Length: 204
Ligand SMILES: [Fe+2]
Ligand SMILES: [Fe+2]
Image 1 (cartoon, rainbow, N blue to C red):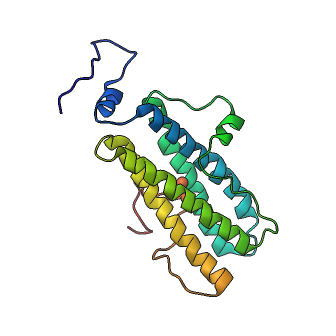
Image 2 (cartoon, protein in one colour):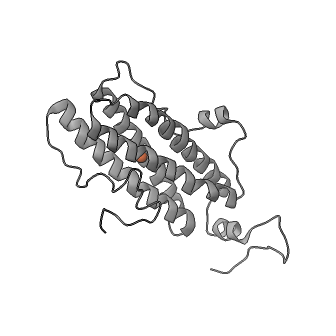
């Protein structure tokens, strides 16, 4: 593909890094909007509310640990994707409430009553929303914007693991069934092997 980015030498109003992905068919404005919605979902819908959910899993130390991994990894997702928004020429709203209201997923507010089953159900559905949101970014960027695609697919890897964890815990807690996730908790809380490019498990 020819490079037709019209960025003149010394021009600081345009970015070759943006023009090349636009030339490959990415709707950059739409992508920025979706990334802000996803960043808001990571920070507000999950990281913040998962903090409250984890507090209410008292008495279930194993569930608390898994919830903590998911909580901290969602914060890692916010940290990973936010610089990309600015690189693309976008920004976060200068108002936390406005940011919260842009989130692409519903806030994971403490259910009433806050039983382990209700909390795990909420956690599961939040992870499912995250998977749906990040695969949309992957679909939009694959073969066109390798940098955003790489970040989104790393996040997606972890969201898919989070869903599997909560299916396993909910199946056990609600139905007394064994539905293995296929993996174990992280080596340390919020390890984020994909989004922090860290080794996978203890000792690896
Ligand atoms: Fe996340
Ligand atoms: Fe997650």
